Length: 86
Image (cartoon, rainbow, N blue to C red):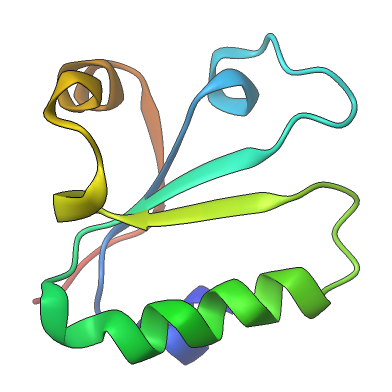
């Protein structure tokens, strides 16, 4: 889904699923390193995740949307799901 909706965009996972302390119904937190011009692609990907058969919710944010107070934690503890080429 990432390649189909955000080709060439770096996407990282962070939060409890990366840290290993997730509960069965914990969401998967993702951040995409996009600029504002990718809003329609981000929204389409959010809808694709909602319509998917994944057994948990996926929260997807663009890097500029994440609170600056989260940045250091995300940079410290993340998993790269897709490398960026932009």
